[in-house]
Length: 462
Ligand SMILES: Cc1cc2nc3c(=O)[nH]c(=O)nc-3n(C[C@H](O)[C@H](O)[C@H](O)COP(=O)(O)OP(=O)(O)OC[C@H]3O[C@@H](n4cnc5c(N)ncnc54)[C@H](O)[C@@H]3O)c2cc1C
Image (cartoon, rainbow, N blue to C red; front, side, top):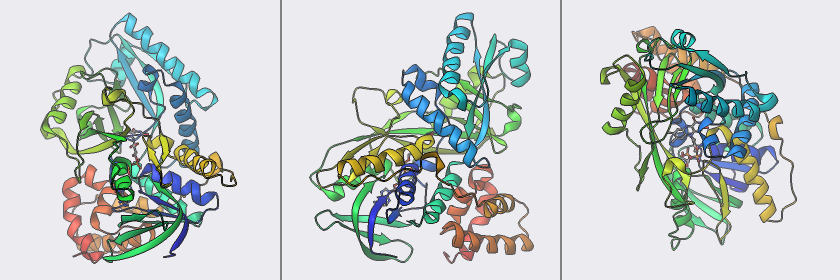
């Protein structure tokens, strides 16, 4: 690997990938460094919506919604195999509620303007029951509107590949352990080989999401400012036979004032999310029993089916890195807008943000970097940027690793495919393949468990 770079971006989640892609596409010699696998922390644990966010309308954040709707349109067009249209129904119980939400969704349509997917429409009680047969009969109708849905970790891999397409480099399993801002160099551990490397940079960007303050501390151990607050959001994946619906559903008000989504995704139902403020970060956030109960009771409050623990196929939990703008605010009320700031020694940090706006985060970050460093401005490709669309291996892997029984012929094919995923999609171990290159770990955890030792052996991990 080259030792000198114009831009080094630390963190291989949505924000870092978007920023490194923007930097590479604007001609900077760019390196992205991720200490685990790409998207392995927050960015593989989202609700999988590419959306303006109807709930942000309530917060009056029209600019954020409009910006995200523009990005939604760009992504639907650029990578239609990964980002797809998603119909969602919002059920209403009274005349007042119906008109209140109708106004909100109408505003959502208007903000999308010519980029709207389809116009929302009002559903009568009969139409609602036809679409969501197990819904309680207490609703008087609903509003059908359209957003988009995606596979977050797959998009991350395509972004890593796109960085290479623009002559940049993106490496995983490499961790920044020291920053020497006077010499403009960082020390990293290459976890694959176990050795330490030193790299020089002109511009250093901190896109470590929930770990933002920790990286700032590496740069300046006296810095104890807390710019990030952590909020855990959990999801349950449930057998879709228990729902029999092809549209998604949004419950606009849960007990804690959030929204609950019940969304068909890859043949099962994804339900969530929660919002639990956390004081400390663990290595892998876990779904608590209270959160499972919270989501299940939200479902039971609107459906006539008794979803139980045994219907849950798998669970996952992610940490929202939220800007610490107002310590008195409940985390669900903190704006999801991204922000950038420079530390005294010149590292640029990105906080907040959404998956949907990863490209805009990148564009704004590089603009900000050029402006504050008085660099000659380069021009962003904007929505003309290309996202790598090579998806053949993905389709093969998704089809193969969920097959049972795992016989000898399948094992040989699975091993060969794992080696190709290592070469072409930066997979290092079986977890990378089963949790992020494919979603077998979420969709069929028992099958994934059987594949794990076979794939680790094929990748020389065992
Ligand atoms: C529950 C939940 C649901 C969400 N749903 C949606 C949704 O439906 N739609 C949407 O648009 N957005 C959604 N979001 C928001 C979105 O997922 C996040 O904003 C986004 O993933 C954050 O990305 P990030 O790059 O900032 O952080 P991360 O994905 O956490 O990436 C930071 C990376 O930095 C790495 N790192 C840390 N320290 C170092 C180091 N020293 N060296 C190298 N690497 C390091 C970490 O390993 C990590 O991979 C959701 C978020 C959550 C939590």
